[in-house]
Each structure stands twice: as C-alpha cells, then as structure tokens.
Image: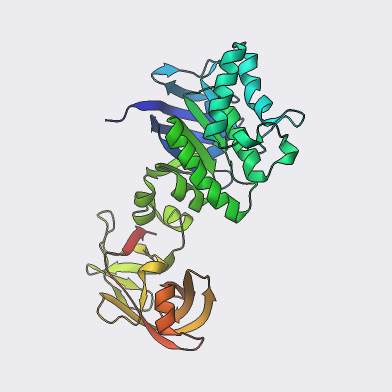
Length: 354
C-alpha cells in the first residue's frame, strides 16, 4: 500500500465574507504526480499558496507525514514552489541559479557542487551550465527553474501553471519531461492547472475543484470515462449533451426518441436528466448499436489526426459533434449536406440528474 504523504483535513479559506476554499479534504500519496484542476476562481491557486505557507487556512489542518505544517513559515517547510514566471536570477548562470538556495543553507562548497552537477544531469542542462537565462529557450529556462526547486530535495514540489508560458508544441514536450523528472527524482509533485489535457497527460490523479470545493478526485481514466457530474463531464474534454426525462423506466429525449443507457440509482421516474456522449464514442454509418439517429452533416473540421463532424439531428437544437479517425475519414469522404446515421452504445452513455 502506498503511503500518504500529505493530508488536507477540512481546509477552508475566507477573505472577509468571500469563501475561497470550503471544507477541502484530500490525501496525496508518496511519489505521486497530483493535479489540482479547475477554472479561474475555483480555489486551486489558494490551495497551493496554503500548502506553500503564503496563505494561512481559516480552518483545518495540513498534515505532512502526520505533522501539521500550518504554523510553519514558508522557509521552514520541506516544500518548494515553482512559479509560472520561473523567477530566475538574470545575472547568474544556470549553475549559479541552481546553487543559490544551497548556498543560503550554508552547505559546503563540495556538497553544493555535487548536488548542482547531479541536478544538471537530471534536467539535461550540463552543456549549458555557464549560460545566463536570456541565452536560453523557454523550455530550457523552465528546466532551470525546475532544477532549482528540486536541488534542495524537498519532500513536496508545488508547480503553479508551470507550462503556461510555453507554446503548444513545447508544452507537449515538457509535459513528458516533467513526468520523466518526477519519476526519476521520486518526490511528490502537485501541479495547479486549468488545462484539462495537461492534467490528463501528466497526473497520476486529478482533483477537480469548483467554487472552492472538491467536485471529483480520481485517475485520469476515471475522471474522463466516469465523470461524477455534468460539470466534470463538460469540463474534461469534448462532450455532447442531450436533454431528456425518465418515463416508464426509459430515457426519452425532448423529441420523444428513446435512449438506451445505464440509469444511475439516484435518477427517478419523472426526473429531468442530462444525457452525455463523448464524440469519439459516436460512429457514423453503423447500424447495429443500441442508439441510432439520423442527421445531416452541417460542418466538418479536419484536425490531422481526426475529423470533427458536426451533425444536425432532431435530438437537440445544437449539432452533435462526432470525431472520426484518419482511417475512417479516408473511407467516408463526408461533405456538408450529406445525410448520415449516427450510432453509439448504451454503455458509452452517461446520465446526470439535471
């Protein structure tokens, strides 16, 4: 069993009458890559600042290996925070930036050199050790900031939107680089992000925050495939939504179409429901699935790896989004105005009380 490193027990934070975080309870494990995911105002950055010691909880405890660290100032906590801006010293070389925190701890010159050299190898910057920040690319500066945070060997590293300043391609590369370094270094990372894809790619587990509270926590697969609410389903990835009602044990859409789906235990006859289906779970031209509907192609968007097809149906005023693979695109040759049939399974349908 993996040991819990950090426990948040009933954490709350208020600014006057404004409740930024409410009764948050989380257990984060040793050597885990954990993501706090949420929209602006969800409370994720406030949680990170409380962990770092820059904010004091109004209520609750923050237990690091069983010890409440709330009374400890930031410089006394075995926790490091990597800022989005990187905050590198422009007049120092890469090596000097890495060494600065160790020198402030008055470690021996030999110890400082040994740990800096080790970290340069881990972040793959040994060949750039004498360069200054303005001589580095965005990705290289990001790795210097990461190395400076790790070189002090904290038990916990906090990352505040660490890839927000990078372009899309470099951000994708650095997502995998962060995973590699976290695995190699073997400490717990907690990353704050509003980027769903980033959280899905990097994290072992994700906590979705909304209005200062915990909405759902689980692995990326659990969060994506089994969202616990309409908000979580809509927030993570693309999702088609239909409005419906439970009648005589069946789900029926507003136009009277019966939808086959597993109905949650808390949904009762007469309840209004939201019916959700991922675009990649819908198939065009298939005739042997539990749910079938006819429609017309109103738009397509070619994305290289796949084709997004917008299909107008009687089920909803908004067109349904269907995602086709590149191989399917080569055989289908769909154009605007084509009449099509969409199918999907009952098992791929999610139902939420409206």
